[in-house]
Length: 287
Figure 1 (cartoon, rainbow, N blue to C red):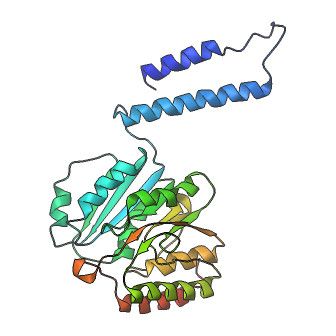
Figure 2: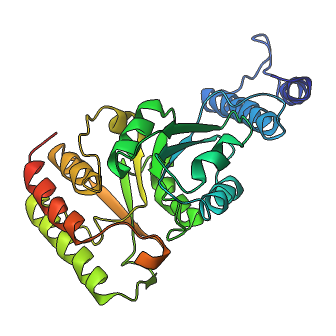
Figure 3: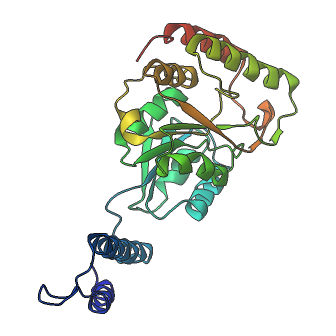
């Protein structure tokens, strides 16, 4: 605790001092509880202000944002800047460079050391699921969320996905592109996503509108307790099936989406859709 916080607490304590036992009246127990909670709140505010000013390092993280990256040199800096702009102070960012060969690795190597950002670089590409699994093992946040590095999803929308978990209202939240304004011009892509979500719902008993969404957030302890296996885009149906098998309710909130084309670097294809269906069947009862 810094000097300013101590002084503030002292002033508050003297203004709300509890009378001695010899005084003809005493504070009720409820009043004492209120004072204790206010004291705790003051301490939290003083600590948050100190961390925000860079006086003390963040000792615990409310949120971990995982950013898997493969050949996103042009968009990754913008995504990281946006995360820093909109996320709470007590947020750690884990970037997993999954064997990029377009200059992404070199750019990451040039970035300075940050207490709130961890960069993990691989020499060869193993797939999005593998990158996410690796980052989960290193995560420390009370909430763990996923953000792609390609600008199709705005990190500001990820806040809506994270918030119900921070408030203790949900354990898992998905950001659905089909509950908000989705700018996906590809009819094939939209119908493909809906077909995969429908099959997933039939096998899991869930009622999701967008199983394949990137914007997913989880209770950190819950996510770290699950042993995941998929290395590519099979991560999406696998984690969904495993949560359903555990009886975890998955909430959905709207999230924005701005689709890019294959000429702009989009990587998922029809083969990944076929593999996703196989994963749904494989993990339908897996915990």
